[in-house]
Length: 281
Length: 223
Image 1 (tube, helix red, strand yellow):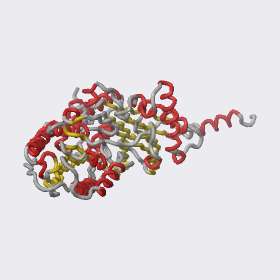
Image 2 (tube, rainbow over the protein chains, first blue to last red):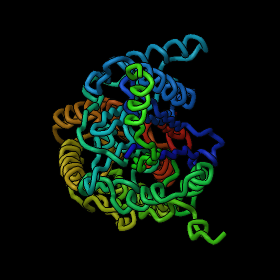
Image 3 (spheres, chains in turn green, yellow):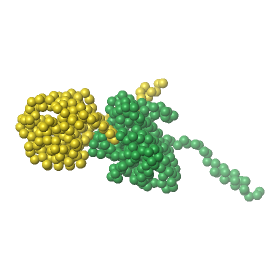
Image 4 (cartoon, helix red, strand yellow):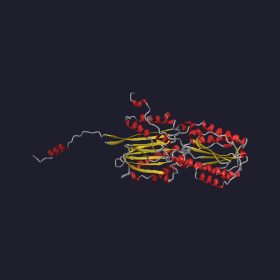
């Protein structure tokens, strides 16, 4: 058996932003790379630009792209191990990139405030980090787990941003286990996908969504992507949230190796060679 | 296309969590001392009715705002924290002196309990608002109350607003409130409560990172 991933993601503008003419301030990206040891490594990231920050949509895009490049670079190094990943080092790099971008365009750093969700998943383990609200959900067998409850500060309209997050609000953890389903979502979907009573993922939200992805036919990536966008912009979703919303879904598919029937010819070779190189008659 | 998956949007089978709305506690501290009798108390009562009507025009604000009403002269909890949907504006009567310090202390105690209850239930919350309305000067010791307001503002436990009606001791109000107190223009209680309702609607629908810009109070305050 060999493993591959099926991933679909979409960021859709919230109805409040449609009304005000504001752009979508969410972004998400993913990439599948082979590590130096040939381990398939799934990289996932999503970011939600702050509503009050003038250029946060750019920031969310920039942060996602810069992070994937850095994670790809790290994971291709010889002997790479998930335990080497360090959220504070990654954040320092991101902040430098944001400062560079701010200087270049004459912005203030706080114009680039955005949250961050990151996942690096390999067979047998996963590493996640989070700054601010939104959520990362993982599943192994029947265990549906939340990385951390959305970190939104004391009040409902507050959160933390990569531009000035205190150390104690950077949440990273390494999880061993065969995480075959992973989802990243921004705060626009929190009220639908998480249950505040037990502070857990709302299983009836995730189960059908992951199942749809797993059972989709191959060769329909556009169909899946437009389906997800349609879902995120459906009246049912919009009745419950007016904010931008991002959902990035990944599921592992184990595919039987195609058995190529190669006849064992070594015996023949040996015989032939021996015959050719045999003692002179 | 016969594939049943094409008959509906993929992913639409997701069922949504049914979470309680985040709450925005609003504490009204209202002076009903003897000096408020006559036109002032009548306008104030009409203002409270307008407040309820304005909030009622907004579904989300109705679900999210929770109103408590404490009057002083003497200190009395007229209405415990209750969702705006269930808040019934009372008809207040004016009588007695102005125990403003005790009213603030009592009200902040109610607010503390309410916040605790909201947190214990895992419900989200917006920063509470405390709105003090008076036409006089405290007839009791108010320094401890001023200290509690200062500490609460510093810890971002609530936002405290003071409104002085004609005759109010604006000097003491500015020592009670970290924010500059506002002087009510005449008896424009109605305009003031409409503004309060609009501000609460903006705040109670803000999302993380939003800068909530409140409208200027110039329609009801002397600026």
